[in-house]
View 1 (cartoon, rainbow, N blue to C red):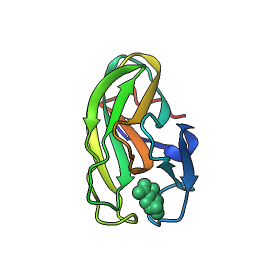
View 2 (spheres, helix red, strand yellow):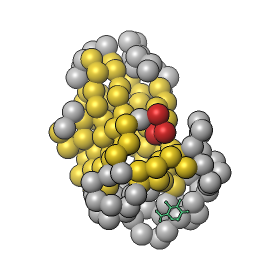
View 3 (cartoon, rainbow, N blue to C red):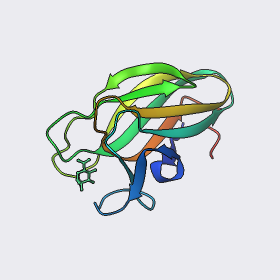
Length: 137
Ligand code: GCU
């Protein structure tokens, strides 16, 4: 079914700031992690039934170093050190996708800086097979 988009700037942000100085983001900006271990962006996602979901993270990393994030669902790690490699420029946005199981109802999907730096983060998009579809925010 259709993916539902969650803008990082509308999520819960810990140790990060919303910026808009690198073009190509969607919505009103992106989150620049404060480049400290443990900073996170937490998205609230609701589905009607327990099911597998495709989680697509859109990001930019203008360095040549990987900036991994730990992805958790309701406090359970579902992707350890998910890679966010360099995209070539801070204005070049790419995506990385994982699949995770979501329980019925509302989940907290958290993307936490695993090393010392995080990628600039634009959004999370969530897609389930559906119907029923992801319940939009
Ligand atoms: C630059 C860039 C920021 C980025 C930062 C970083 O300062 O302008 O958008 O977040 O590098 O290395 O994290």
